[in-house]
Image (cartoon, rainbow, N blue to C red; front, top):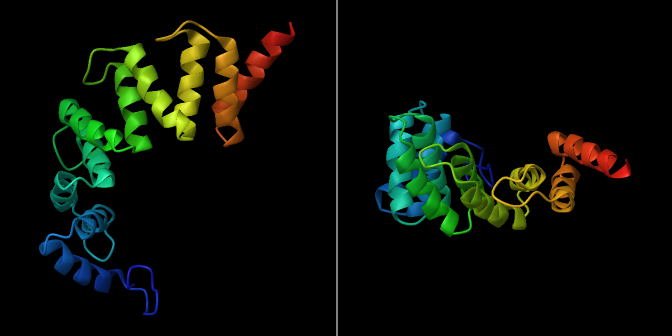
Length: 187
């Protein structure tokens, strides 16, 4: 209530006090929020090492968002030594729970060969999972995979379908790719 100012004056400091009590008692949702509070400096001095600690506690209890945030910290070396292997492990746990951002991140790792052997077919699998949930970044990436024949036979029709979905959701590069492909079809 303090975090959102619902029925009480909004106060990140007071929210931090109450989330800390709940997190210390083992409530995983409070542990996740406490991780966010430390990460962003909401009501407390920003401390990425503490954020990592609280994200890990929540992640180990299966909180997909905490798993994703923890993975991202490892992928970017934010508050911890960069470690793509550990990042992939945590992304996979979140992705298997349906976290579309984690699915996109795994797709990017396979597409770029970051922490894994480059594998466009695997990238395609993960982009498709997120794209089918409506993730616009995944829709764009899936369109690009079809357009350039990465991990799949080149297929402009499929590329148009996925670029259109991303373009309708405001992805400017998808709009540009779509315009280009539609122009090629007219020739």
